[in-house]
Image (cartoon, rainbow, N blue to C red; front, top):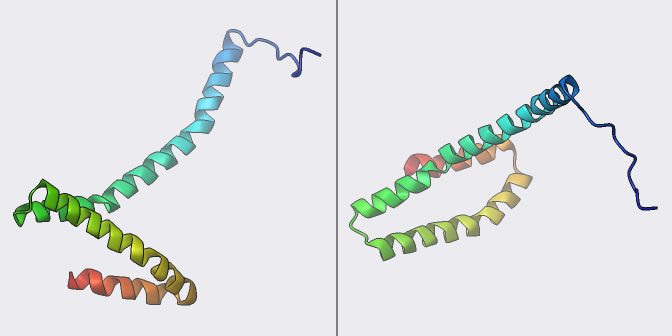
Length: 106
């Protein structure tokens, strides 16, 4: 009753090394995929840092920059749901072009 799992034989020597290498080989693609996703996110999020640097160049102090960033995030989060609803109803091409227009104007 005290043993709920069957006993697994201990791995020694080359068996342990082979099992470890197999685990690393299986984990490596997942780790690389996460690393790639984090890198892409960082590159796409770089524009936020540029907004903060521009606010600093305009002479805003620490509080002003913080408020500008909070306003930026408030507007971004407020528009995310309506933009998602529109993207569900329109084609990908229309949504992409509609997103490029304000980006090009800015």
